[in-house]
Structures are given as C-alpha cells and as structure tokens.
Amino acid sequence: MPRRPTMTNASAPLTREVEAMDERGRLSTISIPAERALTVYVDKRELVTLMTLGSAPEALTLGYLRNQRLVRSLDEIESITVDWDVEAVAVKTTGGIADIEERTSKKVVTTGCGQGSVFGGLMDDIDRTTLSPDARLRQSVLYRIVDTVRTVQSIYKQAGSVHGCALFSGEGELLYFIEDVGRHNAVDSIAGRMWLDGLAGDDKVFYTTGRLTSEMVIKGAQMGIPFLLSRSGTTQMGHMVADRLGMALLARCTGKHFLALTGKDRLVMEPHLADVLRVA
Image 1 (cartoon, one colour):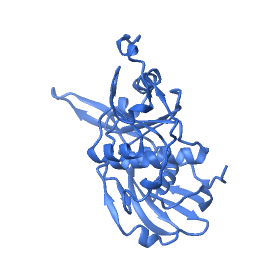
Image 2: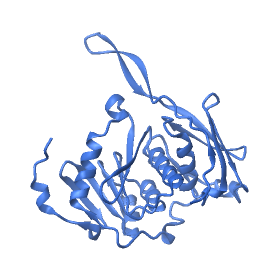
Image 3: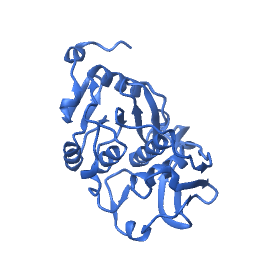
Image 4: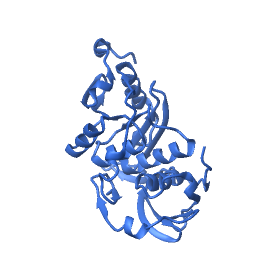
C-alpha cells in the first residue's frame, strides 16, 4: 500500500441551530446544515475554493485532486493540513505537479449542486478507462442497498438541504456514507477515503441521492466502480458516458422500484423479489 500522507483530522460541526417562525407565528429552534468555504492551496498556489459541510475535509481535498487527475498516486502527496480559522487547506506535494498552470487553465462549471467544476476536457480519460467486465449485481443486493440507505442516520433527516453518497461492497455492505452540500463533494470525499484505505472499486456499488450527471459518472469510472445507483435520475450526457463505459446505471431506486438504463447485462435479475412486501 502507498505511503499515507501526513494529515490533520479537522472535521467541523455539521449543523447549527437557528430560530424559525412557523405559519402560526410560533418560534422554535431548528437545525440547518453548516456550509463553509475551504480554499485549496497546492504548494502555496491557490487552486480552488470548495463549499462544504466540513465533515471530512482532508479526504475531500485528496479525492478532489484525484478526480481532477492532478495527482495519480498517494506517494505524490506529502501532507494535507486543514485550518478552519483561515478556511484553507494546504497541500504539500513531494515533487510538485507538472504543468499545473496549463492543466488548470480550462475550467468547466458543471451541473453539480454548489457549482461543481472540473479542469480540462471532461472526456479526456474515458477511452482509457476500463471497468471490471465480470462484475455483477444481484437484484436482492440492490434491494439491500436501497433499504440500508433508507434507514441510515443522516444530516438530511435532521436538517435537510444536503446530498448523500455511499459506497457498498458487491454484497451490499455499507462501507462509507458521506453527506455534503453538493454531491460532487461527497463523491470526492469517498474517492479520497478509498485511496487512503487502498480500496479498489472494481466490485463496488456507488449510491447517490442526487442525479447522475456526466461529472458523477466520470468520477465513478475513475474510481473503477461499475455500478452507479441514484434515488433520482440521470442526464443525457451521464447516460451516454455510462453506456460507452459499459457501466450499470440505475435510476429511480426507491423501495422495490428501479430503472436500469445502461449495463443491463451486469444485473442478475430476481424479478420475483419485486412482489415481496418489505418487512418493517
């Protein structure tokens, strides 16, 4: 396993309380999600400012650099230091990032909540990306995943206004669950944790509460994940990229219902399960 960089552990409070007045004029205290700026500096060069809950800022930063294709190995990162007093994270590399000015000169603002962005061409690495051809997902495991997400304790249930992303094993075991103000941040945080833990994506299942845009599909592919599930839907470009990769894209995953849009041959169907009532 590659050497882990030296990192802080600077998780911030995820909610704050505010006073609200309802339609009858009654006052109460409610929780709302935190949102804070985190400016990323790489070798003292300002790169980007991310708006985040702050639950896993080091993993978010690492996953962001990985999914932007700015670093290829953990060995390239010496340290990641988060300081919330100045709302910044300092990344120190072992040898610098070659051609960083040129590689970050073109920025594409994506459809991700909170204005996600990617550097360079969205499709640059797609034709060189290969997903495991043998990965299969049983319908019973799909139902286990959907039910697990339904019951997990979350900031969304407490305060709303966030997106959640989760990583599951091929047997439906929950490995990571991350929430953030934008789903692109949540997927980057999961990518960072996978990298730190040396976890391959070739038999994993990724779930998001938000829609599967091209950005989300491309990031899933870069993580090597052959199955992407959404409680919502997808976009035309997200569908096109997933189909091109042979990735299984499943939308409208709620209860016993789902729509397999691409990679249908990756599913091991057990249609009789769709008629089985869920036991509370």
